[in-house]
Every structure is written in structure tokens, then in C-alpha cells.
Length: 234
Image (cartoon, rainbow, N blue to C red; front, side):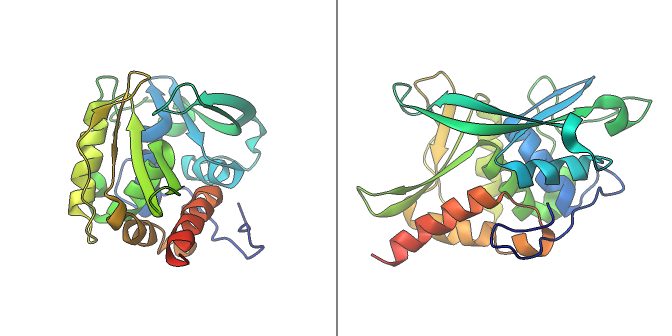
């Protein structure tokens, strides 16, 4: 967590005083949790894009420094949401956070995500960029579309309500980010895409402050930057 992929020093991320209050770290954390996490009264499990991202999420949640029992690393074979006949194998990192250490002995008194699928993002209204970055890394996809020479950004999730909330957040961000209608995937979930012409500006805005905060997944940022470079260099 201390170094970037380029060997430069990465901003150290610490746990904020209140995980349920507005803060760049909490916005990023709960974006990840909503996008790729499971919340119960016993705790949280959330998937990260890479090891540095997993370490950041563990640090925000208050890891004491030894992440061996907090972060689980394994290889997973997944199907593409838009075409289940195509699979890819990748390393996954799951951050597990015990409910007692996360919320204290009184338990979870209030969660941004609950079992009914209600997403309580109002506390993070002043940190929309970090929230959307966490959501993109949690349930978003980024690619270069060689057929059209454009950048593709889309969001995929089992919860239509979450995708509707993401569309609302995108409509409120300072860059123009129109989206397609939400559609069903072949695997039974839902997805929508950002219009291709708007994707590069949105991607640049989302990661503009990443180095200052340390709140990002290096693999996801590299993939987005490479896709934007391919469009620019055409």
C-alpha cells in the first residue's frame, strides 16, 4: 500500500474517525462495498481489484497491520456479464472485516447498505468522486472498443436499484456523463453503459485526485489510462 505501480511513494491511507460519516476514504470504501461487497450483522466481505486496493480497504476499516487474516487471495474463473460463453481467469482479493472490530460491541447501528438493497449515500454527497471511483472499481468495467475506437465504461450488478443510484450520481457529477438505459444481462443481472464519447472525460475526472488520496486500484487506473491513450493516439 506504500508504493504505486511506478515505484513512487503512494499516499498512506488511514482509518477515518467514523466509517459512517462523510469523508473521502469512507465514500471510496462504501462505494466498493456496495459494488462488490456483502454486508451482514457479523461483518463485511468485499472484493478488491488488486492487492494494493485490498490493503487500502483493510486500512480504512482499521486493520492493525497484519493483513494475512483480513485479505484472502485466490484465482477465480469468471464469465463475462454480456456473454457468458466467454470466461477469464484472474486473481481476486477478498477483504473480510469482523462486525465487532468494524462497528464496536454495540454492533452495526446503521449501514449505508442494508439487506433490502437500500443504498444510503447521502452522507457522502460532498465526496461524489471518491464514491463513484469505489463503485467503478467495485462493479464497473473498463475496456477499449477496437471496433469503434472508443473507451467503454459500464456498470454491472444484480441490483437494479444500485445501478439507478449510480446513474443519479453520474448525472450530478461535474463532467457530462450521459448513460444508456439499464438492461438485463445474459446472467440474470443488470447493466448500463456510459456513452462512449463521454467516457474519457469521466475517467480522467474520476482518477484526477487519486494520487493525492491513495484511494484507487492501480490495475483499474492503468487499464483506464491505457484505453484513453489508445483513443488519443488513433
